Every structure is written in structure tokens, then in C-alpha cells.
Picture 1 (tube, one colour):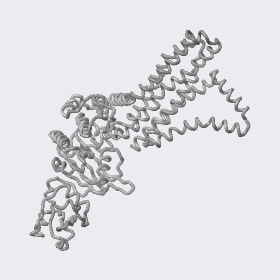
Picture 2 (cartoon, each protein chain N blue to C red):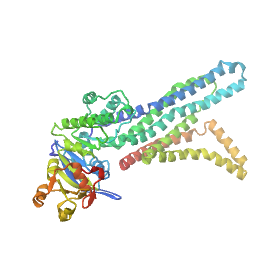
Picture 3 (tube, rainbow over the protein chains, first blue to last red):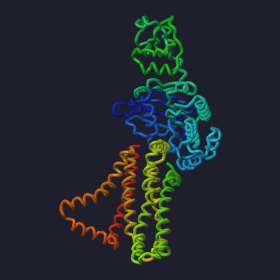
Picture 4 (cartoon, rainbow over the protein chains, first blue to last red):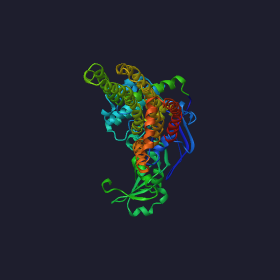
Length: 297
Length: 258
């Protein structure tokens, strides 16, 4: 297999009543983690379902590992693992039985690797899954996902609801997985702090449209929060900021080009921002919104 | 594309999963069937060597033996087959609840393998139940002495089970919601149960009691003499062939509906 991008999505369209995934395009180069962020209902799961051909796309092109989806679906899926937010295995099973079942599901299933992961993640092999904690269930899913020599890991809100210790343990495993530069991860999550920690690239989707896509550090470097007084807000050109958050003490404006804004509004305080703030301001784009009282810094 | 051997491996492990998850239900059914069997054997032993043999009227004992031989194996077979008819379709809901159907499709398992495992598991349970009956029933017939084997009854039970398999699997995959599936699944049973009530009502209203009574007697007589055997066998053939249609329909629902 020869490929530069592990995942390539071009002009992906999927239409539902009241929702359209609108010409979404992005690539995940091999050896990288792409963080896929957006609110609930923004289109993350729809994109992932199209990517895995769980739902039929209405337009656009999808390539995984250099192969066309859905034409090469079964060849592709030998090397792709999907991790969902809930354990997809019946809770009456245990890890030993699952090992046997998945050896039939994945042609490249590796019993030894699975046993190693069970041991490393301290997962009991004879205990029924119904007696597992949420963290254990997620670790089990990841162990299963990594035990058939997958090249691409697709995660749909997989770290949501986990405590920070387990999240860190899982993130470490992902970084280890990426030591093989043929591999890649697409990770959709609400928890932007996780993505800030591990993602190389970020895509931000809202209401079915991709608003931002690129190298995470470039996005974080380019964006900034300009802090101004309430009265000064009227003096700022509307085209120079994404949206404004009004607080009791003034207004915060999200600017997409920090250097340009600093040049144009010399003297204004422009702070570095986070993915969470970027997401918040983009969701409220083209309008001024009020900060919740308890969140004002 | 996965090789032929890989499909066989997939199917084998998926069948293993279905049977493993149905284990509890199968064991419960076997327990009930076992108790019924012991009861039948005890009745027959009592007819031959126990108090019934000592104090009962020979004609009465003969009647009991005939009835036991004719009807209880049918009941036993029904109980044994219920495990497959009930457990496997119910597993479809468990799959939906935990997201197994989504996982399996994201893993590159074809819809025909996912569905095929369910049909194959039911057929395996049928085969096991039939084999079990073949082993245990000769003992009953030997003990019953002059009792006749009610093959028609056994085939009708098999027909009913085939009908519910043909009908239930695509229905449960299509319905997605347990309530919806159970409603449509119970409907034929309700119709069958309500039918005699309708007949009795019509008899009473129209005053055709004598005619229908004769008809009823004739039907029972025909059934007892094995007169329905050819029809039951033809129905089995048709219902078995319809399994393929049912399978294709189930695959279609999985592919289209996810």
C-alpha cells in the first residue's frame, strides 16, 4: 500500500431532512492525529459514518489508505479500526470469548497482541463486561481496535466521560501507535484539551460545514482574543473578527489573524487562545454573545 | 477482498457468538424439556409397572399411553424448538442496543455473514432439538407399548417454527424497536388464538353448530389418522424454501437500514 494521506475526504455531501453535510473536505496525513471537533449535531458522526460507509454518501470522494471508499470497502476495513463512545460488545461476554469472536471478524487478528493489551491495561479476561467500569470498557475497545494491525484508527467521541487518568493512559497508547509513521488517527471529541495535547491537525465542523482545517499549532498561533472596552467595540471593523463576547468589563473578540489585528489595532491587548475558545467563538460567528456570569475571568 | 476461508472463519465465530449469548435461554429450555420428559417417563412407567398398572382399568391405561405417546413428544419438541425461535431474534435487539451491528459493519463483515450467522444458529438449534428428540422419543414409544407415533404433530410443530423463523428474523431486523417487532410478531399468534372464538361465535349466531361440529370431528379424525401428513410435509418444503427469501430480505434490511 502506498499512500501519503491515510484519509482523504473531498467535497463530501450527505443530506437529511433539516441537515446537510456540506462539501466537507480534509485530509489526515499518515503519521498524524487529526482532531475533529464540533458541537453535538454538527456533523462529526455523519462524516465518520460516511467514512466507514455505514451510511451512503450523497456526493464527494472518500479515500482511505489510498483506496476508494466504497469501491474497496472490504480491503480498506482490514486496516481500519473504529472506536465508538459506547462498548459495542454484548455485556454478557468476557475478554476471552471476545478474543475468539474477533479472530473471526478481523482476518489479521493477533491473539498475542490482544493478551498483551489486556495485561498492560489491567483488564480481567474472565470477568463479564457488565462488571467493567466505563474506563475499563473504553480501554477494552481500544485494545480490540489495536489488536488486528490496523493502520487507521477512527474514534467517535471515545474519550468522552472518562476520568483524566484513564484519558491520559489512552492518549499515551495513541502516541505509541503513531510511532509507526504509516499509521494515523482521526479523533472526534468534545474534549478539546485532549486534542490540544495530542493532535497534529484540527478540523472544526459546525452545522454541517467545515469552518477550520489545518495544522493545530498554526491555527492556535493565528487566532487570538482581542480584549477591548465595550465602547470600543463599535470602532472595530466587523470583518476583522469572528465574533464578540461581551462581559461586564468589556468585550473579547476572536481574531483569525493575530499579527494583522495587532498591526491594525496597535495598543490592543491580544491574548493567545485555546481550541475550546476558538470553537465557542466560531459557533457564535457573526454575532455578539454574552459570557455566562460565572465564566468571566 | 477477503478469501473464501476468511468468510467461513467469520461465520463460524459469529455463530459461536450467537450460541454463546443464547446459552442461558437454551439451558432454561433444556431444563423445562428435561422435566417434561421425566414426567412423561414416570407416567409411562407407572402405567407399566406402578400403581396405575396394578389398580387401573386396562382400557384406561391404554388410553393414557396412547395420549402420552401421541401428544407429549409434540409438546416436548415444541419446547425444545422455542429456544431458537425466541433467543436468536431477541439477540438482534441486544446487538442494536450495544452497537454490535454498527461495529461489525465498520469492521468489514458483510451483512450476509452477520445475518447468516443468525439463520445458521437457528438451524443448528433445530437440528440439535430434532436429534435430541430422535434419541429420547424411542424410549417413550417403547414404554408406551401400543402408542402411535404422531409424526404429523411433530411436522406441524416444525412448520410453525419455520414460519416464525421466516417471519421473525427480517421483522426484528426491520423493526429496530422491540415493541414494534413484538406487536407484529404476536399478531399471527393472536389471529390463530382468536380464530376458534370466531368459529364458535359464528356457530352460535348462525345455528350451524351441527355442521361445524361434524367438520371438527372429521378434521380431528383425519389428523389422528395422519391424513394431514402430505400437506404438512409440503408446507415444510415451502417454508424451508422461504427461508432463503427471508434471509435475502434480512440482508437487504441490514444493508439499507444499517
